[in-house]
Amino acid sequence: MVSSRNFTVAPDNSSKEVSLKGDLKSRFSNYMEKDSVFENKDALTTNWRPERILHRDEKINNLASILAPSLKGEDPSNVFIYGSVGTGKTLITKHVTSELQDVAEEQEVDLNIVYINCKMKKVADTEYRLLAKLCEQLGKEVPSTGLPTDEVYNRFFEALQNQKGVVIIALDEIDALVKKVGDEFLYNLTRINDDLRETKVSILGISNDLNFTEYMDSRVKSSLSEEEIIFSPYNAIELREILQERTERGFVEDALVDGVISKCSALAAQEHGDARRALDLIRVAGELAERSSEEEVRKKHVDKAQEKIERDRVVETVESQPKHSKIVLYTILDMAEDDEEVATGDVYSEYKQWCGEIDVSPLTQRRVSGLISELDMLGVINANVISKGRYGRTRQISVDLSESIRAQIENMIENKFYI
Image (cartoon, rainbow, N blue to C red):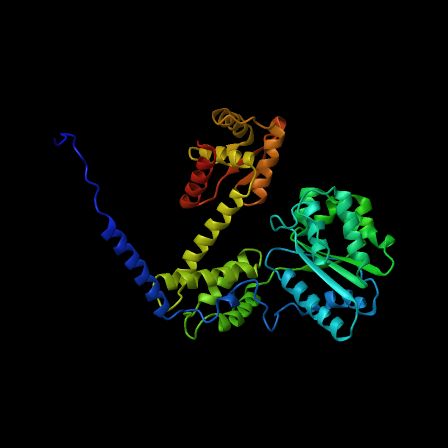
């Protein structure tokens, strides 16, 4: 007996799957056969070590003269390098220390140079991890977690004792670490020479914050006794020359139309003379041109690259913020849809309502005010202090983001908190 139940026959998608696979294979094959606008894309990144470093001779010589005593076994001064993002601080540090290490090896001088980027997650975002990474680079293994901090210091001290001569510890973006864990570890590093017999330790700090040491404890500043090198931003002419040299390596001949390099240089000069920004602009412009199957990189590609980089930067910045910063920003974006500017007090009232909606305990008004300041400093919002006469002062907050960036941020926060 045949059942009267209705059966639904599933559609046969096998041919569609085969078609999709065929389309992808065809796309990848076409990409492999297509001529690229790039000759060597690595030359357009910040990790590239150029043969010539332009417009930084004075800084190179200053740093070299400070570190040179290490070649005679003398303890060089602690040195701090300051400057905005993309002004060549890391590039020059790596260049000078690499040359210094080469000479030390040629002359059979005991010299060990340790470099750590303090902003990298799970590398040096806590005092423990910093010490563990230092131990690792000095040849002593330490587990990533589990030991008392005092024990990690003991192992670090033992690792230093096993060295001879000078150890230069280069801490890039050191301000990021100090903001997270305080400055006590710096004091400990500078005082460690008092207990070492055959090893001398020198600190080389790199920071984007010119006022970094002003927030330190006075005894830490005293123990550092550092020399300073200030990196000023590049101007448009310097950036153009840097890009000209990089693009000769990075792009095939005649891939860039006239005016592309000048436009990237001018835009980056407006962004505090940031060479990293200039390189990102011209590289992403090349990528966008290539995706459009165009053989030349034009100014329109630079415009699109600028929008893409700005969107990625802001969204990435917001994504890395703590939970309550995201809620505060979402509150501001929600309020700024109706009003061009919103007051700090109004933000706090609505922020508390949002916290109730998503079952999160609200912070105090003072802490929220601090989060607003941090978002302003990051460039995500604009918070201007307005005087109200005898009624005191308040901050008027505005948002200067494109529609697409705002929408992407709102969607990201909504998905995070199920708003």
